[in-house]
Amino acid sequence: MATSAPTLPLLDVDNPATGETVATIEQVGADAVAPAAERARAAQVRWAARPWRERAAVVRRFHDLALDRSDLVLDTIQSESGKSRRDALAELITVAGTARYYLAHGRHHLSDRRARPGVPLLTRARSAWQPHGLVGLITPWNFPFLLGVADALPALLAGNAVLTKPSELTPLSTLLARDLLVEAGLDPDLFQPLVGAGPELGGPLVAAVDYVGFTGSTATGRIVARAAADRLIPCSLELGGKNPMLVMPGARIEDAVHGLVAGGFANSGQTCISVERIYVHDDVWDEFVAGARARVGALRVGWSEGFDVEMGSLVSVDHADKVRAHIADARERGAEILVGGDEPPPGLGRAFVTPTIVTGTDETMAIHSEETFGPVVRLERVASAEEAIAKANDSDLGLNGSVWAGGRRGARGLARRLAVGTANVNSTLLIYNSYDVPMGGIRRSGIGRRHAAAGIQRYCRQQSIVESFSRGGGYEIILRLVDTPKRTAALLRVVRLWRRVPGMR
Ligand code: NAD
Image 1 (cartoon, protein in one colour):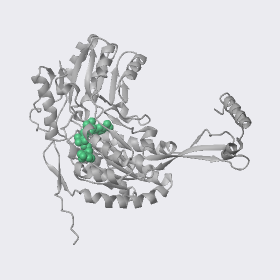
Image 2 (cartoon, helix red, strand yellow; image 1 turned 45 degrees about the horizontal axis):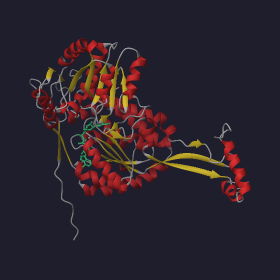
Image 3 (cartoon, protein in one colour; image 1 turned 180 degrees about the vertical axis):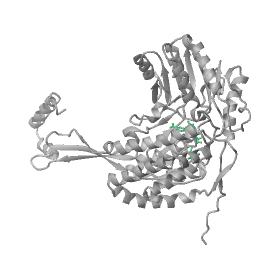
Image 4 (cartoon, helix red, strand yellow; image 1 turned 135 degrees about the vertical axis):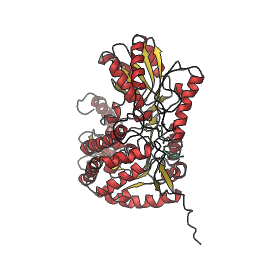
């Protein structure tokens, strides 16, 4: 007798800022993954056979629809994350930017490339891109709409189907993205969100797909990488950071303070590339600390569906407690709290964390090198740029960095010396909206890149096609002709000369 899988409890999605349950939705278990993959694979064959312009038309309509329905998009993001309206708007703008970039440049990144032939005149070579087929994406809660759909857009444009597993804390934005894609004309089987528990769905998802793109914590990334390695499928890992900011003499301090507010406190500090450590040169310490104290201490924190609040809540009380534990640990071990502290802002719930600046930290404190992922930064005074670079690079994470210094060339030189995948000069977060440069981490911050050519090529396997003209002396004929010492010597003379012939090397 066939047994059906046990029914899973419904999933409540809560607004952490208000505590209200905003939706109750069905979740799926491991048994749902294989059938979803089968439907996706059938749809993918038809999708990949359509010309680029037809696939692009769907993504273009999605781009326009998301902007037309901006209120719905922002309401949905805010309702499940508790973030400010402005932070939700940043997600929408970045989704639109990603769509715009790949609509304009994706086809070029995937076009065939003529390459230098193995034997000039007798052979030809080119490389081409073919979609993997079925792409799996596993995404976190910190940018539910942006990370819920933006990485899927180049995958779809390249001709893949996508199974995506959003965070169980914030599935609504991904479901909305799916609705908008379907309204834009996408076959629903081509972008299927699987809502449910990560440890339950993660394994079956990796087992069902041809490529997995993971965004989330370093610990979970390791589990996903192991599962991908078992199957020998390619994967990318976009993981955490403990991102340094350097403030050096000659920097415009007022701008650097604004950079700190954006880099450390936008999205309530829950941004993989957000600033967590700031190294400030002696010469500008007093001015920077005074500015940072004033500006961070005055941040308007709360819940609002308007633009009157600068910082919303964190994603959950649990996560806010973890962030507060970093502040409390630092305070108890002797750090100085310059602004904020480990109590929620007055009158607000426990999912809110008071924007906090800490100084006088040391290696014994969790805040020193662990990712805090909240509105908390630590400041450290340094005597030179050399000391700042050495301290910034003393980390096993290497995602993003930021340099503020007088003279752009000097600042760029410092940026190059940071051990990070992405570096910003006179900015902290600009990298994420710079779609034509690859974005990703080094060290334990990840493997692989999103954005730019790499961000669409990763969803394809590269195929090389070489041709030999067999009539009149193709490659194989040459090999057959070399069958005596004299002919071998003649061939070696040609090989020796070859290095000197321009245009044929
Ligand atoms: P997380 O690792 O806890 O969860 C991420 C996703 O993985 C979720 O969908 C979760 O359900 C799923 N998951 C959990 N266990 C799993 C398992 N065993 N197998 C497969 N999937 C599993 O991360 P989070 O707390 O949601 O997100 C915060 C982290 O994400 C931070 O460390 C942050 O730095 C990182 N992040 C990185 C980037 C980047 O681009 N580098 C962007 C955003 C967030």
